[in-house]
Length: 403
Ligand code: TYD
Image (cartoon, rainbow, N blue to C red; front, side, top):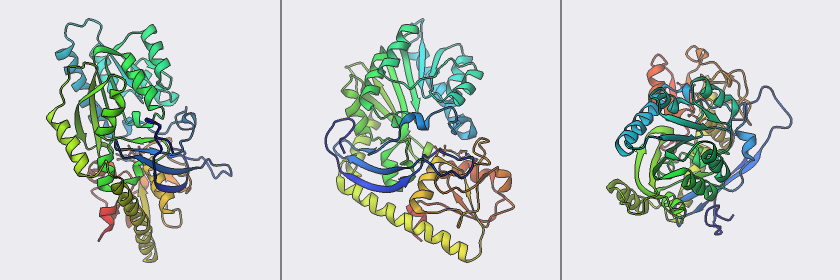
């Protein structure tokens, strides 16, 4: 395929085969379920994994989008910390600006902006999925129900104003036209403004072999090298980064328009680590693909072994990541009885592709001998909550399958 950023021809590294939408939960069995062929290619010059084919975004982000940030207490806490960080930044760096303005791209249910609104900061959320943006409005967050783009950035400026801070979490990796996105951010940001965003980090995916970060919504897995290159083209300079534990390993990026910028020591070290860890080397991606294939076979074998020993298996967390895992590993109802999840609109539905029933997590404790932890990125929170579960936890991750 041609790299979406550079238009250079880039190699395919992994083919997952036929895949449904990660959040495409079904009310009942249907004959015309949507599938696409999921494969990824890499631009290893800048450390950027990308989906070769991506479904139309309107198929994924619509009025029944199944992901609500508020379902995880840790994520609520995480976004509270983000809003505190933004609030401090506004007071320290923009104290003399009387028209402070914060825009969040992909504001979901408004959990981050809500805290700023309560502190009388003028904010705008941009969120195309109407059901989640409705929740955001309920919490007092003004929300623009559109997909963010350069044209939308112009609309926001004409109806509102430029932003001191643009923030986005787990959103930029969803937006296929990365050039338009970077141009839109540069346009919307004040000259002294700061763009802050976070996404699952390619370095963690290669390290943990967490291939489940690759699904229809994640067009990209970024590294610091890729972010530096992409955004510099539009006058936004990467000055700092922060490693995060969210989503199994994420990176927060800090970018400014100011050309007199300096890179933080942490960023300089991260660049060095990306090189020494092979993020700019095609062989690392070949190794990644080999390990994914190993983990795929091992995970199914392990579940089959439990099943042949008459153990009852359930899944924990009907995540979009679990859609990638179940379909890639070819695991369905013959092995997993049901999956528990706290999200009301997922309960009573069937998982995409493999049609495993999703149930309220009140069903969890009495049932299984083995639980496949699909929400593995929330392991700490879930293990605390389920400390009465005496069965066995397993994951699909390479390192957990080695013994
Ligand atoms: P997440 O891993 O953030 O999502 P995705 O892979 O879809 O991006 O989603 C967490 C899912 O796990 C969500 O459907 C809610 C569910 N969940 C529980 O059922 N119980 C819990 O304690 C937590 C933290 C999450």
